[in-house]
Length: 142
Image (cartoon, rainbow, N blue to C red; front, side, top):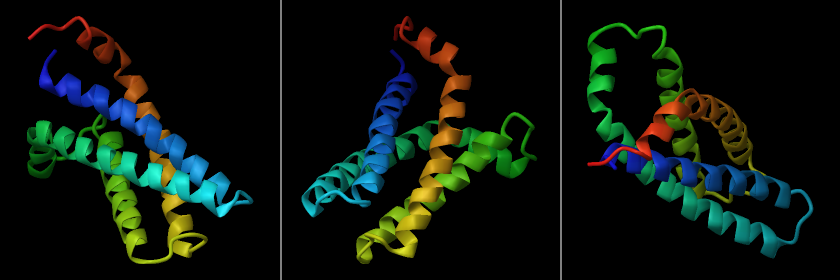
C-alpha cells in the first residue's frame, strides 16, 4: 500500500477516536465524576496528538496541492478542503491553548468543543467523498 494511503487510514482511525473521546469528554463534564472526566481528557489528548501528527504527515504528502492554491485561485472542488484546513488549524490552536489553562468549563474549552463539532462534520464529508479512493487503496500494491 502506498504511504499516502497508510497515512489516510491512520487518519481515519485516530479521527474517529478523537471525535468520540471529545464528545465523551464533553458529556463527562456535565455530571460525571472527576475521575471519569479525567480519563476521557487523558485519552482525548493522547489520540488528538496522534491525529495532529498524522495530519502533519498528510499535509506534507499534499504540499504541492497547498502550494497550488497559494499560487493559483482555489478551485470550486478545493474550497471545502481549504476550509477544513483552516478550521482544523483553529481547532488545533484552541486545543493546544487549553493545556496552558484550566480548560474544564472555560470559554476556550467551549469554543474548542464547538469548533470540534464543526470540524467533525466537515471531516466526515471529506472522508465520505473519498470512500471509493480509500476502498481502492486496500487493493493497491507498492
